[in-house]
Image (cartoon, rainbow, N blue to C red; front, side, top):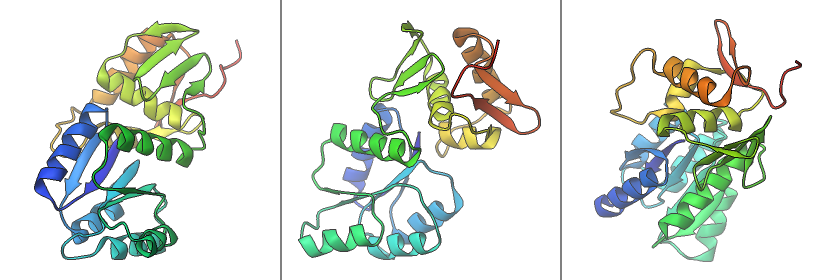
Length: 223
């Protein structure tokens, strides 16, 4: 899951990026408000963590601007500003959650997972499609009740497909989900991961839509 982190404090930003990566997120980190708005408008993220006290452009301005543009991704405001009026203002401008510094990394990761689930119409802790069960927090997968061992990229790819079960995702969309800045992507990487998933999960569960991309059906196809 790829997220944008907008935080100008170098020590805090480095710690958040490292901690969220350990929790399974792909993290792009920017350090000012103009860069945050630019990346939010140009890249496909599952969610964003937005500090309010950013240089060049305040986080409130960034939040208001991207919401006016119709951007709907979940945005979690992370700030040291604990005054009730400012918290109310952030929520009214379109923030989906509001967390005060200092923040526990496990809590932050859990809040992000919850925001992404709800944004995709998945209210429960576990994701289910056909006979597959995926636990985002534990990063585990079960097939018909039995554990399946997946490599990191294979899990992330299945996670994207299950969040969007029933929808077709293009190769570009899947690449954006799996890889943050500076990560080299081989031209056939998605195809290779799909091949490995099909081998481990069995045929028919992930379908190719020729010329478009891939989809995981919510229900098993007719025999």
